[in-house]
Image 1 (cartoon, rainbow, N blue to C red):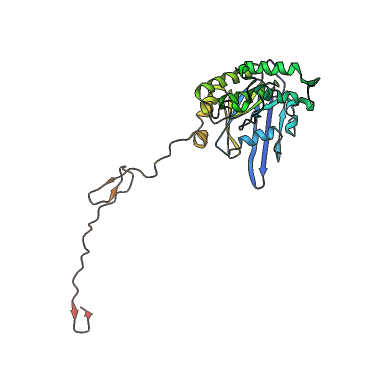
Image 2: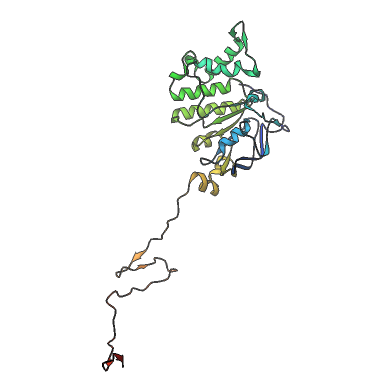
Length: 303
């Protein structure tokens, strides 16, 4: 896939500015801002429920923002998913969304046969140009030999590649990948990383949501970290990895001990191991000593 580089002073491929999305009384995104440049790969990470998928849905016109804006190549992003292909945007789904009874080739042809809202067929047959583009995409992902195989019979890693081929066949300028490494083994993740780098190298911008930190570190130019709908960090993978806020919210840090270790004396009373802590002296635990009381007379009055 070959694209033409944009001029240095042109707008970013994707611009998200002050994006706020609410669902009833819940604020899913609060003043989220970031950009994706031409040919850049940006990873959106964060704990579950941080708002990552909501960002994707806002870019694709599936949810309406309360405030802020989303622009693609300087123009407002489509207000509905039907406008994505025309804007040069393509997306994969966590659930893949393949048609199991269709062949691999037929699945990849789906976005081409509906581009621009018209069925691209010639005399009842598929457009030869579309078929050629689909086969070329399959070949680039190592799927050419599976073109005639029903998608539902394939193992999961191959189905993931078919979904990626379907997203790439339209030659998008902006590719959205929703957890592309999920459920893959090490060899398939390495292959996927190579594909993402090739796509970006051809000038396509990539925005991906992913929990696989090593994969993110391998392919991303920049990382944007969300937590509870807020951007808490942004920078290179190494910068983000060292950010204390990210360690606490996402990567995890060792929790401090709740109680400092203590030594116990022979009397069973804890004494602190540090010199700054107050010292508790042991107390004898025998029966309390009671002084005898003299009584005077039969009335029981004390002397």
